[in-house]
Length: 133
Figure (cartoon, rainbow, N blue to C red):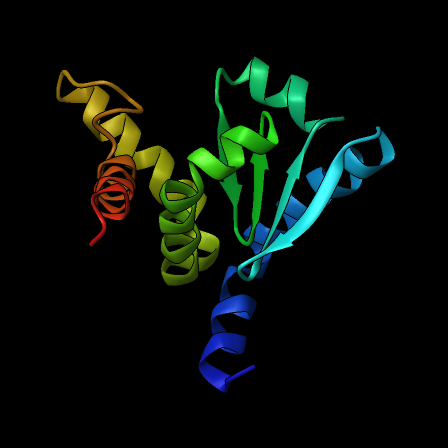
């Protein structure tokens, strides 16, 4: 691992720690954990009802990606990788910044999720990957 990559993992670790807690709970409740391209992808067990409660197909917490199913993890992989990169940039400030961006979008008359700047960037990354760029 390069020093730059190690720094990105360390900077994102406070958020990743929340993801690791979700991974532990997922493993203890029969879910599946799998390393994939520098992240830990998890589904089933604890992750399933959590994502249903949040009405989400996938969710990124640092270097841990929760998915409603292995198919959702594969389908949304590039979108979630964009969030991993965002978390590597923002570190411990990622979750508050994400929330504030959603709140700002909502206060301006938009939608908390779809008009959130972090989501717009992730959507662009997903579209670019599907277009082969």
